[in-house]
Amino acid sequence: RASGSESRGLRHFSGKVSEQVKLRKVTTYLEVANQLVYDYSKTKIENGTVSNDIAVASDEEKNIRRRVYDALNVLLALNVISKHRKQIRWIGVPCDAF
Image 1: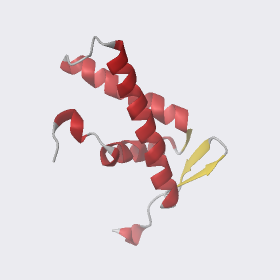
Image 2: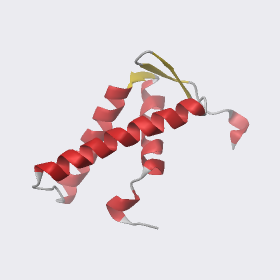
Image 3: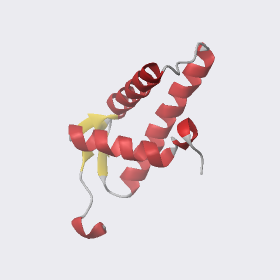
């Protein structure tokens, strides 16, 4: 298993995306993606691991946004969220699912 920033894959971001949609009840892809990019950047600043390379920072942001998009599609396929045009609504996980 990878450690550090390498472990921040789809599973990690799916959990973060799920938390954001559940917290907001009704949201959009852009709101969720912007919040997660902000949170990621804030953590990097706090840890002192900010990249001085603009291309690297841009790639990291694009990767987060792509993973948010992927995670939303997974949650949509599992009927945990619903989507109508740009609006995303939290449905929830069935109680007996776990």
